[in-house]
Amino acid sequence: MKEEYSRSALLLGEDAICRLNQSHVAVFGVGGVGGFAAEALCRAGVGEISLFDPDTVSASNINRQLVALHSTLGRLKVEVMRQRMADICPDTIVHAYPVFFEEKNADQFPMDRYDYVVDAIDTVSSKLLLVTLCHKAHVPIISAMGAGNKLDPSRFEVSDITQTSVCPLARVMRRELKARKIAHLKVVYSKEPPLTPAQEPSCQPGRRQTPGSVSFVPGAAGLVLAGEVICELANITR
Image (tube, rainbow, N blue to C red; front, top):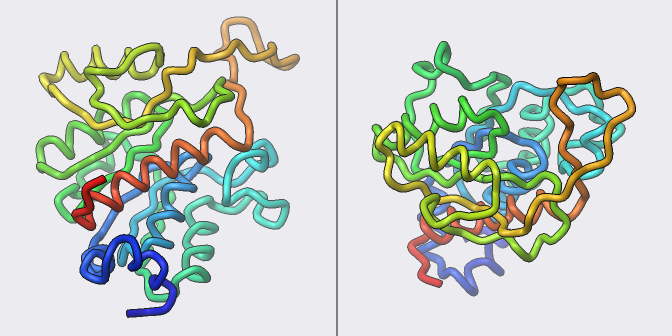
């Protein structure tokens, strides 16, 4: 076993590390939440990781996203993360897809090629599509609910979508999944009531207000996501 995984093996066991090395996980969204989840998967020894995100790094990402540095401004987030992962673990196979996941390209990415899917997408329509496809393919998926407008990283927890409360995104997902006859979805969400951000000076009337964010909240949600995936793939009971 490689030395990079020796500390993890002390808690998980060498057999678990082997299972992780043989696993393929897809991460949809490599922003504040998904970036931390993706890196934790890589550092834990997941052998193959597919990254999906159409965006490039902007200055407004620097306060919370692993991929966001002044040296990476303007670059594709998935390419920055792919390069970062290569430096963390050169043996990890990383696929970088700079695409917006939607109906017109979904058939290019069959869900049954993945052992687990992490949903860290912001767009509700894409989240619902991803969950529906994983449900049909019987592929485990875990979805991030809202991490914006929150200040307490200790409030994130793993739950079934049916047991969520407070979170506005979870409320929408509950309703839409029920309409699609999908009874259950594992999620990471926070019971912290969302704060009301200050009005942006440049925000036009009728335009959606940009959520506020801080350095220490989205990453916490991403690490909770990754922890759940890693322990399930490694067959670890907590």
